Image 1 (cartoon, helix red, strand yellow):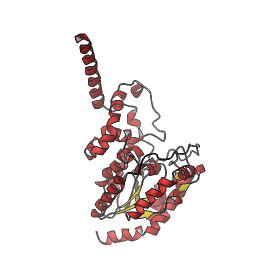
Image 2 (cartoon, rainbow, N blue to C red):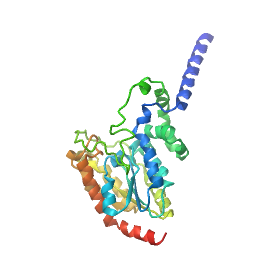
Image 3 (cartoon, one colour):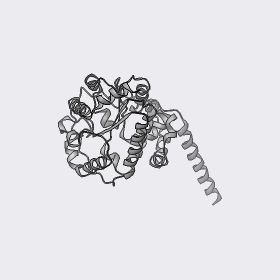
Image 4 (cartoon, helix red, strand yellow):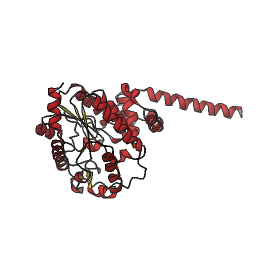
Length: 317
């Protein structure tokens, strides 16, 4: 029995040693090409882009769904598209952008509908990899709820450092899911020459609505206001067939935002995109699709009076 316990103890010791070693090993060459590392460019834009500015927050539906140059040319604003991946979690997205907000900035959040349900708001594996590999200085931003969400991914993250393919299998660094796939405004642009790939529609959202999402959005709204900036919420461009499946949950999100007096740009129905204008996932738009979505957003921004807000902040710094 003692021999058995010794063998088990030795196995546990080796397991824990590898687990801890994996956590602290440097990012693997393969992982370092991930689109998550696009955060370097986006943080640089947040730090250095001149005013007047418009900052976009959201998941990949925003990075694959916007042509920021059209916004710059139409509205005279300097756009910064901070969006990377939905599973960084909207809570982290807002917190990581906050320190860069300046007086006069316009903040536009375009969250995917799934972020209002279950625990998606608190992030997933991509959040873990972001705070451990990409931006360790932001690890102090994580709440207990976020740690609860991402802790289960820690073993997989750690032991991935011991996979040979992470070191010897060369990834395609120039594809549309790589760190170099973002243009000078933060938009993913490598997929623009490509057409519709016929992605499947989403299934209905099974999780319940998470009331804490609205609570945190209200807190963020107040924090933005304290910085003398302006916050708006808009809706993601979504494949029409998925929109029809999710219509009940989408209406619930819209109602909650209306009931809590958030300034809204457009309506969910307005951003329902024909299936033919969708790229490889229900929120990812082809170039024709994102051009349409961007033009709709430009019109909504004009209707919202953002130009008056910019003029006011210039006159009252």
